[in-house]
Amino acid sequence: MRKVLYLEPVGGIAGDMFLAAGVDLGLSPEALTQALSGLGVPGWTLAVKRAVRHAISGTHLDVVLDEREAHPHRAYADIRQLIEAAPSLPARAKERALAVFRAIGEAEAKVHGVSIDDIHFHEVGAVDSIVDICGAAVVLELLGDPEVYAAPPPLGSGTIRVAHGNMPIPVPATLELLRDLPVRFEGVGELTTPTGAALLKVLAHIGPPPPDFITERIGYGVGTKDFRDRPNVLRASLGRAEARAEGLWVLEANLDDCTPQLLGYLLEHVLVRGALDAWVVPATMKKARPGHVLSVLVEGGVKDAVTDLLLRESTTLGVRSYAVERRALERDWVEVETPWGRVRVKRGLRQGEVLNAHPEFEDCRQVAEAAGVPLKQVMAAALAALGTSR
Image: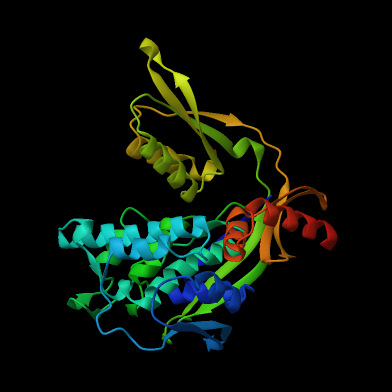
């Protein structure tokens, strides 16, 4: 069984609407704040309230700053350093947030005809945008890492004033981010922001609805503006779908001229793109050359996208694929209390019976480092706490 999150940008999408939809699905604003507390940016808080647009009730969220920065311009390298140094952000959330910022940076670089190293983020480099993007990555963690699908977003029309002056809507970066992806040219005003476009591009499969799934929770993230022609909401439906054995594939590529750094990069990025698992095995290639076999387990819905990634990002000249079967346990997350703090434990279940359990490594590491105790001691305490809480 896998989790599915389906996003419908009825009134468009922005970073704060994504966070608001997560809260409306039941996530705690305090949990979001705690996960984002390690970001080294000036003071901020999350202001959450109920709001209504066109008779639809949902959650509205603002990132409230203690004092707005006079010149919120940051280079990609500065933002990367902030995110990588944040001790409270889970590793996968860091990867996703960095991928979103890189996508925005590449789009801006393409629009302005410069290198990404020369790009200085303006609005997107401000504290509230950093919190929005890192918060969106945390939302997916707190929701249990669902597979994300999204309907084509409406882009809006008109003009808007930004750091570079008056710009057409959609602004060039938004359109560049969504190039080659399905969109809707409709609506008045800026419905999809660059941040919203980047979140969809990096985190979601944009296009047709997801395979059939059972909807369990529905949330509405409410935007600030109130449009005449549509409710300004982002609807998020969270549910579960059974993984079909015939829909699972293994993709393989032989690599005899690939550096260790590139192999590590590939492993990280196929997982961000939706792969279920990925691994590298040493091998002896023709002419007795040492090399590696890169294997990736994917569902049919992301097979083409991951294959394209391997062809573009690796040194291979071809990718093999074959269908496989897998019987998977149901999975969930529970929080347990150790003598040094709370950590999450991932459980594997079959018909309600817990067959496997493993403490979240990043949680245990943060607790161990903060308390000055051995990591293995925290992990053992987490398993013991899980046993007493069943």
